[in-house]
Length: 130
Image 1 (spheres, rainbow, N blue to C red):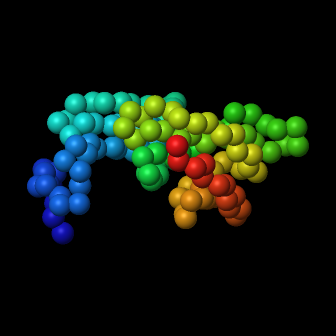
Image 2 (image 1 turned 135 degrees about the vertical axis):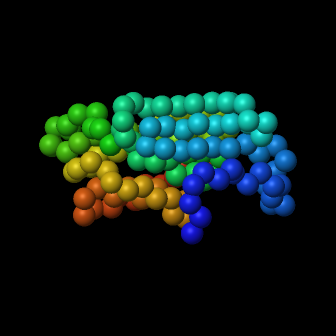
């Protein structure tokens, strides 16, 4: 096991596009850099750990807030699911999701978005790509 700081491997990858940049997703948002290292886009959705770490697929970063937008009339909670462009970090789509508790896991599976909240998992269809 290596310890201490290590530089990132910058050797070309045969499978990567020569114009590919870098997207970094965290609990606080998304950073997108160009292949030359310039910041291309940033999207932060709120305070400390206000969303689950974005999952990347097909040019999109998908995340859900962990702070409720408020209660629904039937006592559940409303959370916003965001789809961001991985080239610019711009929000492409916002979808309200009703859950019984704070979401604790988000996964992308075969064209679907799985959001787990406590002991319940909700499966949403991922919208078709334009």
